[in-house]
Length: 179
Image (cartoon, rainbow, N blue to C red; front, side, top):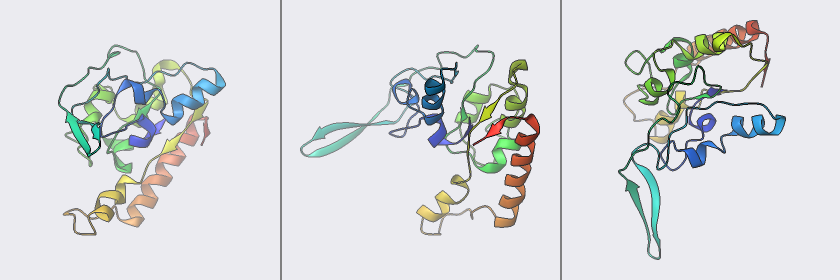
């Protein structure tokens, strides 16, 4: 599974176990009865999880406690949903510092083992037979939700088209069904 926050199971401004169990690729894996390894963050998740404090009056709080990665030594992950990433990160980022998005989740999930694409291709000697891909909305989302005043522009459409084609061709060369 390749993607961003939607793929990872990110909810309430945080990545946490109770939500990750309902990531869409995990639900698909459950339906077909296959093992699916995710980088699980113990509850309450990453710092800043939004929680409802009161319904009347409606108030929220940001949980300042943080969970930990429960399976840092897993030989591989099947879920490479990384909140905040952009398309270019899939093929080229190996860490937060050399990424376009600067997502802090890159280091947590990639663990110094290369790019998302290189890990999917290798997958510790396993040959993936089915790949989900949900990527690209962050390439324009920040700019759009800021009303077009965000300091960075959306990814140029020609660059986006080139990168998406390169990624699709690369994934097709692995021989897996792409959804």
